[in-house]
Length: 189
Image (tube, rainbow, N blue to C red; front, side, top):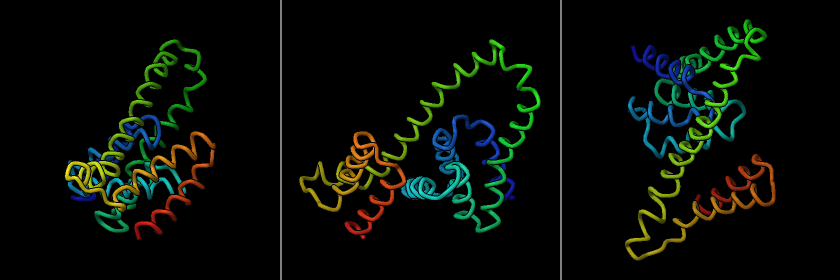
């Protein structure tokens, strides 16, 4: 029964999760919260791991959740669930794409979907940043109690440095992830 629920949960995410893995993260977050599989902190770890491992973020996240919940079989079921809708939809779209490519309705649908995708990615940023930068960090534990702790400043500093490295210096994201992972291991490990 748990495998059916796991498959159904990720099938639904794969079916309605437009805009790629980052846009699917809020759906995954809400589902794992409803399912009671992992905490917010574990979810932020899931996002980090999904980013640094090869492959699509949503597939990596589904595999992680499935494995976390029920080992290798859970990972396989969740991965199949999130991939199957896209696979079937692409087969159908490829069959009819030439007929409807110039359709005003299809073009209008894409105009409507694009901003929703950006909004879903922004929501993912908010969900992850709350658990990484607010809960258990400087803002929630030390700022209002009067004491500042070096350890609690580190996530905020790494966040700010990442923005500068990627946004200003245009450093490749994978390099930044490696550098920040090493920095976190050295400073917090």
